[in-house]
Image: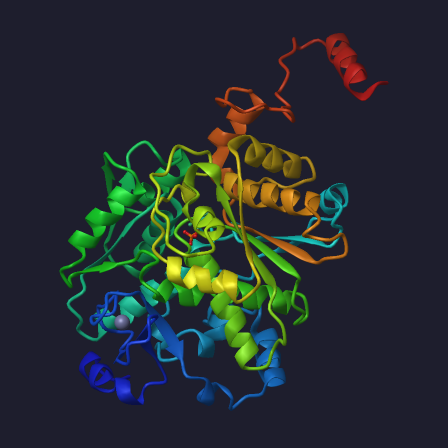
Length: 453
Ligand SMILES: *Cc1c(COP(=O)(O)O)cnc(C)c1O
Ligand SMILES: [Zn+2]
């Protein structure tokens, strides 16, 4: 492998590099400590020149990715690194920090779909992963690049992020696996117990601040101005490279057919940008010939993107996010706004919102058909219900809901729902455990009553 200095001087010949999303001409090495365009301040994106990737045709790429999926060969058995050539091809094997993320279940929600009137309904269970959310897909890429930077003498000593919970869990786990110190900034009292205890357990430096996510974000940007601490939030577009594989994986799981709709809960807007980027790459290389329509789902309590959509994206709206059960998307000033607008506009997409009551009901309803949905997935399912009722999503449409986290990270939400103690929520599907004496006849009576025996 080449040294950092060589990689830096060598950006001209690189075919994968950072470039400005607003179109400034400069290229930057992905091994540089850089997050925004030095000329105009816009976000960067990792760009893959298409020509070198056209050495394989669409069918050959499909064959290659199919052949690697779920194998145990390092690092290709990872859903992310199975697409290595499309992610970060210049990483050395020994610097890949992977826990074999991705390859998550594309769950056929047959019973729920029939009840809602869309039998071709699928839930992409991104939360069935190492730290319980899709954030693992991005962190494997970011931490791997950091490992390679450190191996080549970069000044980086640690990684840091502000988080609504899941980002910090993923960063802490991958950093601990690689032996790199992690500093985590959380809004005090605004993350779930499971989300807080993951970075604590993984030995991260966990700093709980008396502010919200947007406040933590400001602090972490100050702290990471110095090159010794590397910023791991999604304004760092390396994460997008890992997350973009989810759309490719969905299409692969459908034997390279494109679904009609993908509904995704959004906060900072990194994940929807990533989803779009993966589809764009497949289009450019001829693996698919149409885009799915992307639907961004927000909670009414943190709906800046919805408001921007309503004003025809004439201007970016920012809000002060309020308390919501969907705490991982409690974001008022989304970083990846520009990329997400493109994702919606170029896919004939939609932005819709859901209330607390709607998200809780949608999650509980889905659970009754065998799932265990997190509140963010509840937001997406509530939006699905609205779009079906409005006739936008038709009964024959193939629809995918992206489930972003595992419900087990949100047991407080589940318990509160079924005990009917969530403020302002009508727990119409509550199914609390019943407390009975250890007496066979009392038990028989209760069962007979419940099953109408
Ligand atoms: C991070 C996260 C989101 C939102 O993703 P963005 O990239 O911030 O839009 C949604 N759901 C869960 C569970 C998350 O952890
Ligand atoms: Zn620029």
